[in-house]
Image 1 (cartoon, rainbow, N blue to C red):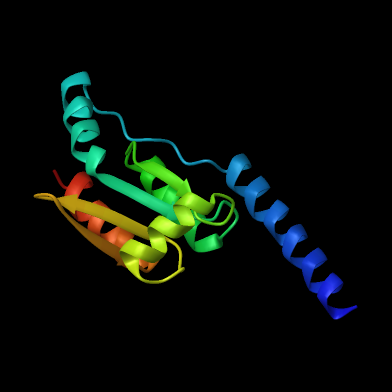
Image 2: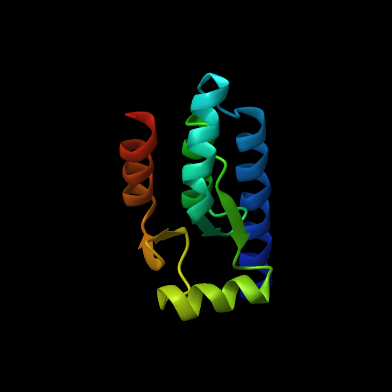
Length: 126
C-alpha cells in the first residue's frame, strides 16, 4: 500500500513539475546568427544525462534555455543505452550529469549548481 501511495505522489509531482516548467518557460537570450552558430558548434561536445521530471534536471534545462544552448539531452531513466553510457562513463546513476568532451577526453560533471555555473561561465559571459 505504501508503495502505491509513493508511486502516486511521485507521478503527481512529476506532472506538476513538468506543467509548471511548460507554463513558465524562460525566454532565450538573442544572439546574432554568427554568434549563435559559434555557440551551437561549441555545444556539440556536451551531453546532458537527465530524467525528464527531475527538479534539478529541469533547473539545468531551464538554464540551458535561457542561455540558448542547444545541448543534446539523454533520458537515463527511460533509455537503457543512455543509462549504461552514464554508468560506464560517469560511474554513477545520478542526474543531472553533463558529459563534457574536450580534446578527445570525457569529463563527467554532476550537481545542477556546478553544471549551471560551468555553462554560464563558458557561454553567457562570452
